[in-house]
Amino acid sequence: MPPIQVFLAAITLVLICAVLVQVRRAHIRVEYSVSWLVAGVLLLLVALCPGLLPYLADTLGLDDRPLTLLLLVGCIFLFVLFRLSIVVSSLKDNNIALAQRLAILEYHLNRNRRYEENR
Image (cartoon, rainbow, N blue to C red; front, side, top):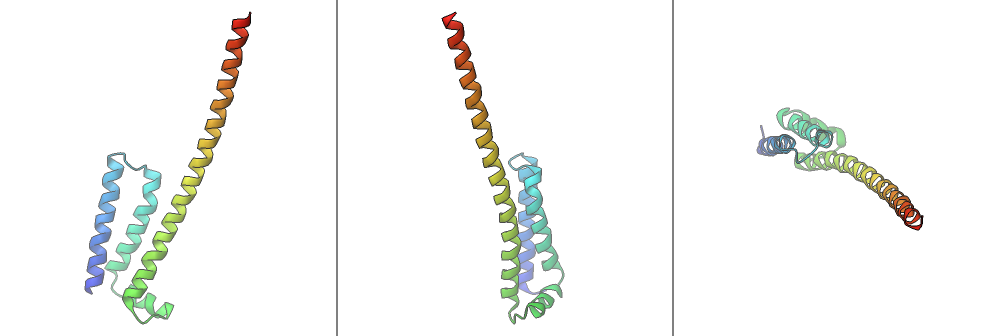
């Protein structure tokens, strides 16, 4: 196994262990850790299957295996970041809706207080 694949396997195992530890400590929610774990498993698959990287390099028409690996890692993490961007956008929308509901409730509460004071 080439040294680059050994290095990739080691880094990937560290990533998977770090994600699992953070899930266990409740620093990251399980549904958000899934994309990181899938990315780790895909990278581990590339690292542990020695014929996969040359096959991908030939399929993509690239002569250099490290370039193929870099392209693959970049694509995997691009999808992870895209998924996290969707989650952040959804959380922002939920936060705005919650703030609006709170403002409406405060308005009604203040209006009821003023009404009670004037009675």
